[in-house]
Length: 286
Ligand code: NI
Image (cartoon, rainbow, N blue to C red; front, side, top):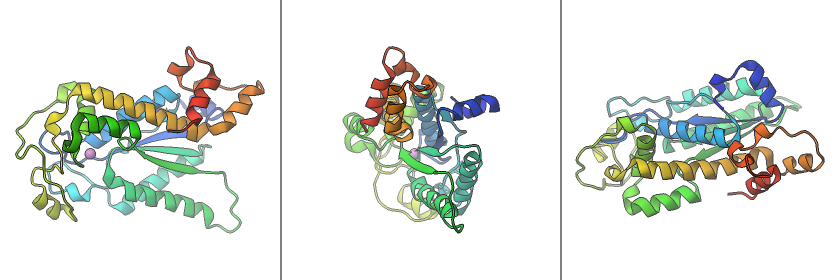
């Protein structure tokens, strides 16, 4: 459920059954010769929407520009400074806390965001801890990188082995091809698998990785593989989200016959399944 397509009345009603919300965060940066500039934002967005659909959860607008200063040597790339991104994340979370949201589940598409998002969480917690005698509602934030769970890692290894690399990977390009089949590009790669290594600023990055890739061969990407990677990511993250937001507290409520709004649980799964089985599966962990 996209937050942007709900009314305030619907959001208020949803808060009675769930205090969680999913926030996709990506980046707008070069992804080598065939990867769209929006690869990281596209992957985070489509996977977050898939999780939102499966979990019956609200999905906030995508944070499409991230911390990508090292990509600025390539046309079209954009960045927020770490301090700016922290301020954006704080304001977004605090806006929603004011309405009663308590669990903020960030689905991330860009490795360069990790340090800054983690720092933003510390800023959010610090602002709640510092006032003397603070006794505020519980707020928890979680960051999950869509490609870093057992299911997706195994599939990427099986599909691409060492050609997966770490930037402009065939996996992320494949997910964009699945999401936007009309925007698939092709180009020659020399060498087929790009070099690996370290970098500092934008000029250093461009010197070390002249076509933008790091350790990868995105020429191996296909929309069919993108579909498999999407399905694996949505399944893993849905399970993780439901377990984190509802945990075991959902079970006693249902056993006591207290009203439980099934819209909080995965629609597809609920269809032919007892809700308790869904929650038991969800709380088993990833
Ligand atoms: Ni990327």
